[in-house]
Length: 255
Image 1 (cartoon, helix red, strand yellow):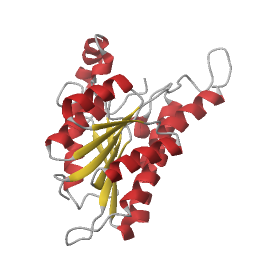
Image 2 (tube, rainbow, N blue to C red):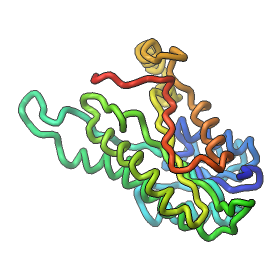
Image 3 (cartoon, rainbow, N blue to C red):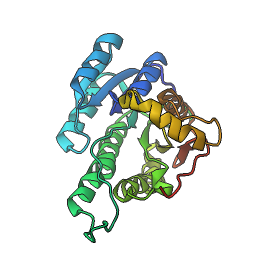
Image 4 (spheres, rainbow, N blue to C red):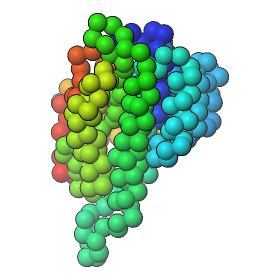
C-alpha cells in the first residue's frame, strides 16, 4: 500500500509513540489526522506540520466517529493507527492487608486499553470498508493497534493492564479474519520498554534500570523505532493478523 497520498488517522497522536508515528507518516507523504486529548501538543503538531488535530476520546463512540469522519474528509483514508494511553490501575490481586483488588480500577483499565482499542478498530474499519479497493490485491487499508509485551508476561501488580493488552493481542487475528473479505488488514505492535519524552528526567532512571535487562541492544526502545515499524506494516501488504514484539528480545521478569 502506498502511504504517499493516503490519509492516516493516528489515535493518541500527541503522545510519545503517536507523535513519532505522525512525523514518520507525514514525512512519507500521508495526510495525517492527529486524534488525542492533549490539546496543547496536538495543536502544536498541527501548527508545525500542517496536520489536522481533532480532540478525541478513544473510549467514546461519538468522539472517535468525528475523528474518523475528519480522516475520511481529508482524502483517501487508508491507515488507522491506535496508540492511545490513559489511566491504568495496578496492585496485587490480594493486597498485604488481605483486601481484594478494586473492581473499579480494573474496569477503568480495561475500558481505556481494551474497549477503547476495540472502539477505534471497529469504527475505523467501517470507514475503510467504504473506500475503493486499490492494487492487484484489492486492499482497502490497514489498522495498526498497540498491544504490549505485558500481555504475554505481565509483571506482579500489572494484572489489569496485562489483561487489557492480552485482549488486544487476542483480537488481532480474529479481526484480520473478520475483515479479510473487505481487503482490510489488522496488525498489532507489542512494545517492550520504550523511552518516551513523557518520562522527562525520570527517563534517565528508567534507562539505567531497564537498559541492562534488554538482551540487545542494551537500552530502552525509542518511539522512532515504533514509528518505523508502523510504516513498514502499512507498506507490506502480506503482514496481516500478526502481533509483532518490539522489545530487543526482552522478557519481563516477575517483578
